Length: 193
Image 1 (tube, one colour):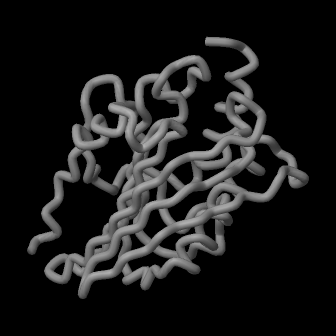
Image 2 (cartoon, one colour):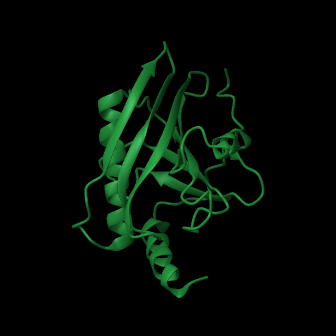
């Protein structure tokens, strides 16, 4: 691994270590090569997102390779103890805080370009979905502004009294076959419904 990549990854690991716990069981199952990570909520790098629960993440095999087709492609699910009551404005605000906080923690800089997040939102009785884009300064590898296409799906789980919010993110176009890979990352919880 490139020595220049080790320092940012080490800093991120140290910054997030206190918010990780082994008590949470994964809710995602992914094909071989998709790297897992679980982070406790609330997030240390984005305290304004004050949910309790955890974030279960799967990184595509080429996530850290800027030349790979699946560079910065990943999915994560928030497993929340409370209803996030997300709407378009709240989702956009939280994604701005999430990426601004994460990239500031990785870069140890507070002068990065601010994140832009735009979503189209739909809501059913208990569940919701959204599609959109997040444009942010990618402090891990490229060290420049990139745009991710995003799918978001929320699910209310009344029997378990949990709420799940699944995010799929990639800089590739939504019509790229790579997006079909997200269907191979399974949510192995049926919410008890």
